Image 1 (cartoon, rainbow, N blue to C red):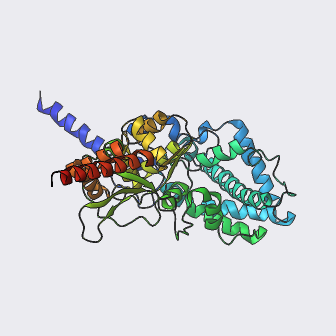
Image 2: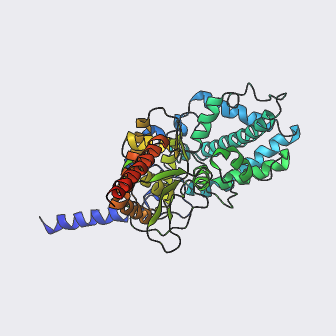
Length: 437
């Protein structure tokens, strides 16, 4: 190769490398970023779990929204304006658009990238944010009013509402509002709600309270978080509230299954009112490194149609945003180790640790086993517990005691018969010995 051609190649490469790198190709993450594309290797396990089925919020899935839902958003927008005095509607809309325009860059920075079709046209982007924000505000206000009316049987204000009047659609919309890719930054919703309250004065102290009311079924501990990123983050916060500050160590290599633990005498005790992640065994007290009482206390998990979708999106959020604090991922991974097949699932269902709304125990086992596919676990707060459970299961003494309980004390009649038999045998032997004395 001649020196001239070499210099041309080098010059060409230099020009290529000197080109400005697109914003979406930066190698460092923006601090504001909190709404992500679900990683491909996770999404491909169950794509439907990450895709909105009814309502599209934000730019990622907006192009796939059907015309019916687009029209519904417009009707909700008009209904929201009806809450305002006639002279205030136009003023409110102008203020709304002005704030969205001023915050456009901040809103865009919350997303992993801005390559979406609607992001390219600033006018379309502003219009999308406006429709989606007001739809959510109206939906939450209607839902709150509907719940209040439900307490008074004479009131039925939203009986014919397109969403509120259909229980299945209410559930489907709420499910879509938890999806990681279907989010708006919470701060813009909160900011615009405060503007709205100047005009409509709704009976609600804050948008956070209104949101907590809407997702109250996940807020068993009734917490009041000071700050949230978006709805996916909020539901994660509800489920992991008051999570014990266990020491995070390396991922769990192995843990005996539920049936194996039961064979060693372990009993599974449901704790309905505890934080979902607060799994603990009965030990001998502070400083004790073993399980003194064969009980594993597990907060009750209700598994129904939307459970997989909710858990998958919370886990996807943790993989993208909280890799070192992946509480939900660690919980599901530990559950996956306990449940290897339908027999393990059936045992936890019979113990009332799991409430099964899916039907067959095999469906529960398959759901739990599939949840961790594609999930990377870098640490676990259940590592120490898993080691204690393994030691308990491997104890020959525990296995013998469990065998005797199963064989001779399965129920009160067998147990009583065994005790009576042993007593008779003792008396017989005693009399036999006396006959030789």
